[in-house]
Image 1 (cartoon, one colour):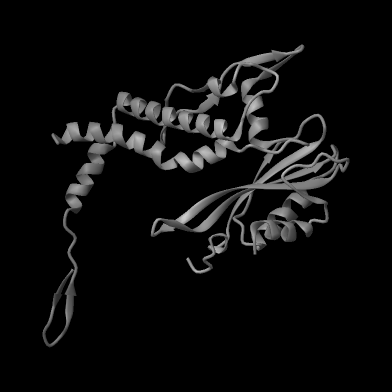
Image 2: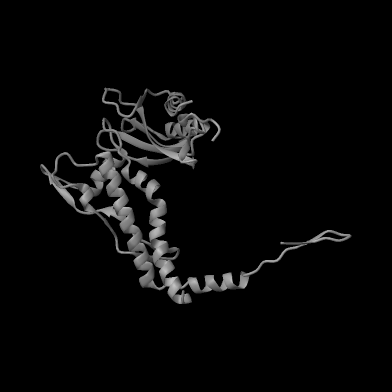
Length: 116
Length: 153
């Protein structure tokens, strides 16, 4: 399973629209995911797995209690084999925002090696 | 570990050098303040360079200003703590855009985490990931040099 598939599948469970990288539409409540990929498990001059530094952004209107959603998203990511996320409040005058950060590894699939 | 064979097989476990190790830790504990300060300064400089490099790679900038926020990275004066010491790598200063004054640290924060309609550029997180070993090496080198002088190596 690719990291994109993993994120779309895990985050759909939160019941909000999910978008990759950036979203400029009219939704007020939504999730956006992005990630950086780092090669790992080096042997024979080549990486045999990829680590992904994942950021999921949860955006909500002001005055809405975000706690249940933050917990559900954290649990969904953890159940999809991500590390337990840390959460940074990035709210501004436009609404609430939370950067939910975790890590995931594909076990070598990206480099065509499922058994690193 | 030395094995002894006979009618009854036994194993004798010995640990050499424990006294020397304990002595080394006793001597290492009081690292002088100036050595600690030098180590933290060198580590912070490596961290600064890593943040700047990642920022450039990800295109971190303030589109409304000619002054690059990556030129405003600095670190605080090293401070001794109960666990060792600390120096924070941070962004200094602020800028006025229109009539609004914005801290450079705030611009860096929005670049790092993004906001509605703007994808994040996690240059600080990536710098910490990529330069962790180099930052530790810089501190280790200063303390290693001090230790070599203590032991006459």
